[in-house]
Length: 621
Ligand code: GLC
Ligand code: CA
Image 1 (cartoon, rainbow, N blue to C red):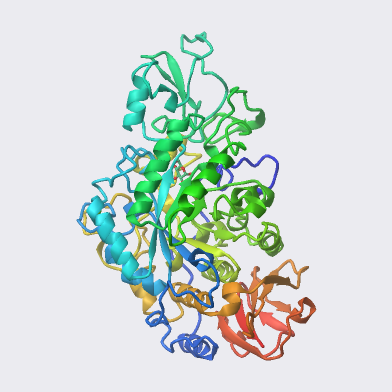
Image 2 (spheres, rainbow, N blue to C red):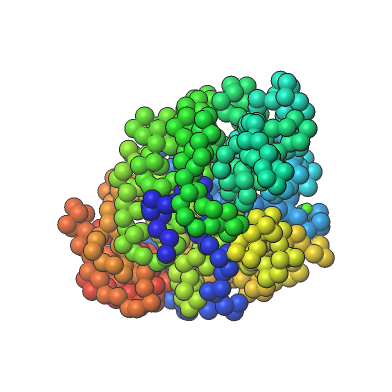
């Protein structure tokens, strides 16, 4: 099993380590729904000091403003739930089988009801779509597939009316090879933009008559990271596809141009950026070969470490300048980083450590991608985020468009839904900013293509059958049990809708009080309203228990503390919690939320009997 802080782990290998076979086989197509009697569940809702609506599917959202600042407790993003939308797959509004901006606007009521505060929009810029938008050919426009700039402005305004902010995906490491900058750059060795990309001479001609690349660096998407250009007889560097040439961040004009694009969107009113592949901005200027680490990857290349192409210290200077730029704008604009890093020390650097002058929210991938139900490891990693990042704000994430869905990474094939509840409870009751991915809230599964000819993601085409690509986690959002799951009216959608949509969909789950969707709504509402969950310190309890993760969130300003106990095993576990030892006093226990009917009447922290994979959240006063 992969260990994330293993020395071999290389940050750029976000996918390699997660699923080396690329096949997800642990779930059965007919999902086993955890049984929770609806009435009992609704009764529990009524018990909480938060005052849930009795009808669990008509939640608490009507009265809230996601923007409300509670008790003056810091910037909005500290308490936010950020929801990643993969625009191709969320909602199609014009029947072409591809999601679009107007489709997203159409679903804002749903998103407000869920309780999210911001959308992270995967790239919508004009793009040849080689990497489905992560190959940008114009940073200051919208791809016609998704709409127009006017549609974007309308979405921004409508989202604001729903108290939802929009965070753009910003790809600074590379452009599309069809971007005018690259077209100029490749046109001749003397073009003024030549040095905007990383052009180098090769090492002569090989025995096969082909030019030899400058060094042994490999692309994360397979093969040499160097592409030869016969016209100018040099190679250019590409960390990803050859249609995604890396920009040369040692050239100040590149920074100036890219920061211009950043301003373009900030001026339009976006709330910030998710910075794509941001640790990859710089490469070793000496082009030293990277050491081989043994074995081959899914594409058949010899594995190399990435010490000369990833997380070079120079990147932090750029981050500090970018933060200074963003700070010029009012309203708490936020920088989020796609930061797969080997340990919490490296993560802390991305905040600027104690100086707090780089990203506000580099993603913590140490927690969400543990990929096994290991209570001890979660305890250790969550505690590190609480205590070892210089008072910065952790951002936890379990799902995104690059990895098999958490349902499959954590599920055991028998208790999948209960496990999904444990994951959600952990995400929303920890002292973190929470990042989620569309469909996570209804339990969408990874639906990896079974035949190579159906694969759309080029890494799956290239890496088949070892690497089947990322289509599986990008299937259309399941809104209802009607045609195309309510996603589209097209005869065929860009990726097929997952076959479980007749039962796994928003409409069905909205009508089921005990559904996974309502579980998410309740957790998010609790997190928004409860002072302890907003700001209370997170203190681990029962620290030697390998089977149950328990913690307390300290009360704030006289509010009750919140105690959380999550059974990480398929066995019944009996626990006794002693928050008093951590200085948290109180005798009055009330259940706030649980998926175990037997725990609804819990009155004491002694001998709590947790059924397999049960979640229990209570207040302590
Ligand atoms: C990031 C994106 C991924 C993309 C890659 C290249 O890792 O999340 O989807 O393929 O960058 O832009
Ligand atoms: Ca469309």
